[in-house]
Length: 100
Image (cartoon, rainbow, N blue to C red; front, side):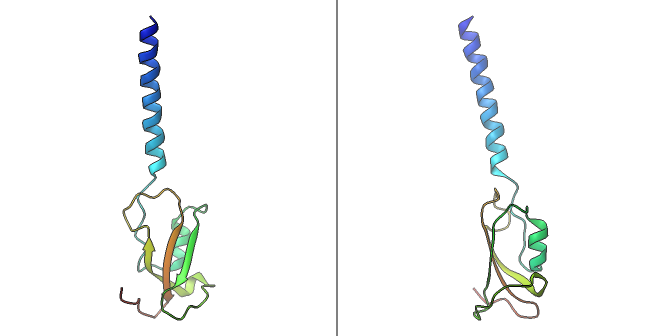
């Protein structure tokens, strides 16, 4: 009887580990490039740290999200995302994204 209890307990632990791992992986990162910066904040969970910087070379402060569009993002679209920090590179609306 003791052996059956160990097998059942081991199976339950394996199932719990699989569920925990699947939940930790999180959803895929959405495609944000080409969208407005406000879309980033409305799409990502409010608990996600978002680091935003001007990639135009002018090193401007990004103060009004409605005036900026996304050029770069990390992690890339489609990668597994677990609410870790997100790096967003932006330029002012009407400007072109710099070449890589």
